[in-house]
Image (spheres, rainbow over the protein chains, first blue to last red):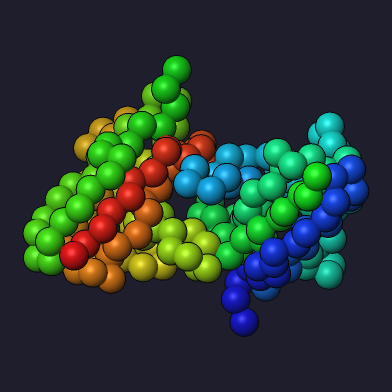
Length: 110
Length: 111
């Protein structure tokens, strides 16, 4: 079992729809959780961080964390073609090191 | 404010050649990291440095060495490049346990 697992996709949604990206992790001691977006040929950029159970909203993005079930998700409302990218879930160990999932490719079709 | 700067952006090596990838950050972060990214594999940690003067192995350290030259700079060295080291390499920095910021990456091909 991988420490951080994501469905590699591609996940295809029509423009204006809600995209739902999911991530599960195996280390119950994990405290910090991050979603990075990576456009093709570019470096990862942080879009959301979440540290406690529940929802965290930032514009069209909502991160959801459920530590009991060991999953974290990212919802993108009103998806735009510019949201088409690979989304990386990352989980921080207590050492500060991040463990990344393999990423989910999102395609938003006009 | 440049953030994290990596050089070079592209490099082609022959098997057995050596090279050093350079990374510098201007955010006064204590921690710095080197990752490699291969198709379908996500980002895998090669080495990291929690603070100036310390380094530690990550998930895939074989074939690499690192130097934390000072608080700003963290270099990655390939002593004898192999085709299996063809990859995209990213440097990142962070305050302890917090958000990591990435450089633009180095695309390395080993023939």
